[in-house]
Image (cartoon, rainbow, N blue to C red):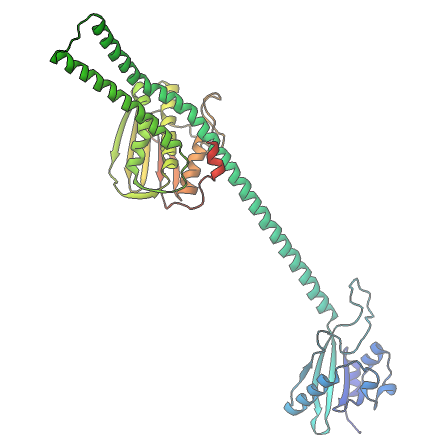
Length: 410
């Protein structure tokens, strides 16, 4: 077959080019193919490609040739999962595990009425290597991401356990303080019971009590006084028991109720220390809160103010509690917080108290409860004569409360 083609041009191209017909007879074999296959032009031309490369998928190749001739456009040969059209050893020094050239094959119509096509072979080994390297890098990145996710999860779990441990420490520290408060609050009722019974015993010993109406009324009143004292003692115990009861569910209540429950626990000790409490509850809206945790925060702020009054020997100490717009403000006239440490007071284990009086975790845990459990904010603002702690509440967060094993320890 007499075929015209730009031999010089095709031989100078750094890719493989062959002319074959739809019967797979080779009519041209360029220099690139001669060099890379070690098959001379004179040996393969006018021979059938099957004689040299019997393993080719000639059903697919024939279909691709017919498609290119019929449509008049190039088609692409895909030899299954392999990217090698004809096996060619790589002649470049490389660290790659690829010993055979990776190829892209284009089949272009050349002389359609004679069934001739030009098959072009492009070396894509470097591109394939880059792809493999990229895949390896992607795998590395994915592995690193997976490892990072595991580390982050481990860190979160460790942080959660640390917070749980801090809550336990905070509660235990407060328990010690609460025992002292209970003792203060029990003193007056117990003293009154003691004085009442002693008076009754004295009168009975002197024989001044008989069955008269006046004496019966006196006994009734004395018994009523003792009964009131006993009820008062029982109420104090109930308040503390409810405060320390593990609670995993939220409550619907006003912030005024939170403040009143907190005051009920510490009120007697405030009275003993002559601390004036001013209350302003203008917000009556009911909110969903973790009541025991929120009581713990308010109680901690009140106790901090009380300790500060004692430490600084403040004359006419007073605390103002204001509830407004989902916000609780607790302000005192205790002289405020030094500006150089006001940004540190919420750090864990930072305390302005003497070492034997403070753990440094009360304000940190209070901030954690407000910000993480109630999606709110807790901040300290110095005023002219003291400091205001402002609690801004948001919506509660789920699955934040202590687990069952932790609450057993409290």
